Length: 189
Image (cartoon, rainbow, N blue to C red; front, top):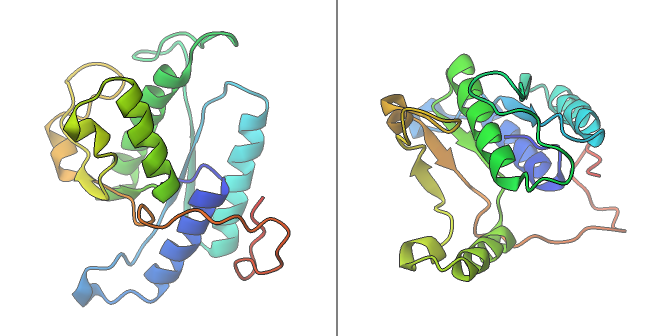
């Protein structure tokens, strides 16, 4: 999942490097796709889509941008600017990512969540009154899950054969602003 931000850009770089050195006997991925979801909610969304595409192209990684079709079944109408859109945008993004996984026939999706995201998730879940399972945070590896058979996040039984991985989940985010030591050949903005 390539948001075009620094975390997913770093992950794409690492995954593409790994795929180039993949030894199929060890089960490492030999192919990596970049998938970007354009929420089409703000003017900056198209800029981020272009940035994700450019990053993938520079790394020689196949790329797919998918746009959320607001107002088309099962998607609601496009939320207005002042609406609380986080939950509906998340559900719509999950739908587009799941659809893209199926189209490229990928068995899993990798997210660039890191240790700081894990802490933030646990705190948010505590504030919402979540139980022990919820405050444990995100799992580094899990099945996509069945979900329901209706709604934006419906994965159905096939969702049990798809995986979500978060390989950076134990690594804290480090700020590199002002440093010249960046990933070779990449400019992360």
